[in-house]
Length: 107
Length: 408
Image 1 (cartoon, helix red, strand yellow):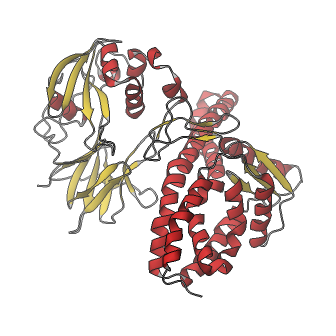
Image 2 (cartoon, one colour):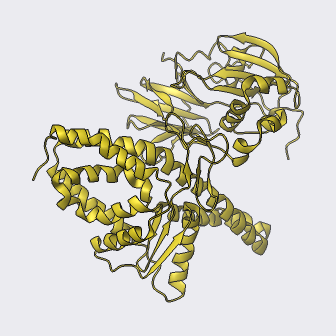
Image 3 (cartoon, rainbow over the protein chains, first blue to last red):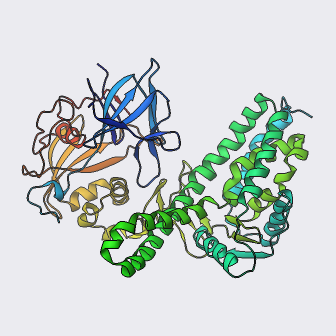
């Protein structure tokens, strides 16, 4: 089993299988963008053609990397990370908000 | 002639040319208008276009973006000429032609040497750190303001039901047109990176090949961003001030890091663009409420860094719940009871200090939605009791599953 990987806000969790109902997400100018920095315009990005970003029906996102060489995850202000071939759940860091609490009414 | 190897004298010139172009890119002198306008005429001539009849000067890239769209519509409507924009001819075609010819005459070794030591270094400092930030700020601001006003007007006219249907189209069109004018700008001084490359190649004997770039090079040496039309040109001023940190990122602690003569500028903290008040609110007027109310984690970090993390913890009346290898978990009392986890960035800054982030985590057991670990499906601790549980929660994981081995 591959190891989980974290780069800033982005956390990649290896999974045994990804859902059957899934659609590929189009690249942005040739790159897979896992997350954009809202403020800096920086991005957690992958360019390797071996990588595909997939979206499941519940909006969960998965990353599939085929071939032997793997792919590299880059970001302007973090070190680059090698991602081994395999399948990963893409998790973006979150914060608690009042809206997550059952005490709050959302309109 | 071909350029396959630089002489020692030529090599010694590389840092000189680099510094000369850094000075161009970061210049805060008033525009040399006569020289810039002569450059425009030469650039049009290189593109086999007659010189533009109308010359307009404005004071900042923001004025330029708005002015360019206004000028385009005006030229089209008033029969003064045509609003056709000629950036492709003046810029892309001439640039592409020179690029091709130079490539044929310059050996790989020289290309890499001049590329690494001149072009890339100038680009990183000027285009990457300043030009991109200016462009992003203009884009965000015009998009936000224009969309806010045009959107509101259309909504008033069509009513809510129609609005829901056309909203997306209107937004895309407004954004598209504004983005077009950001994209059609020629960055003037902020193009210093690649122009420095051709300036070096010219000085090493290939000026016959780079000659068509002389016009746009002159504009870059004497003005800020500009827009080219078949019948008009719109030029803008250079900034009054550009302030940077030791890593050459835009940074100012007392006002805008870059500001133009009309007062428009970019507020930036070590390269992170932030709203003006984040920089200019006096430190003793920053409140725990203001920090808690900032929803953007990066902007919040800047605010905390400005006043100091210890002062923030004191303002928030923080009590330490737990400290472990992952960070510190705090229970704070102000402005309202919350739990926050303090994380230290795993990639330290070159000066040795590490960014400290404060993230809010659950303080209550009551949930709107079930919260399960993305790794194993187990329920997550309702109220994290350790920093490890808290950081794992922020990545929707239980502590057993949240064990990233590769972490930068």
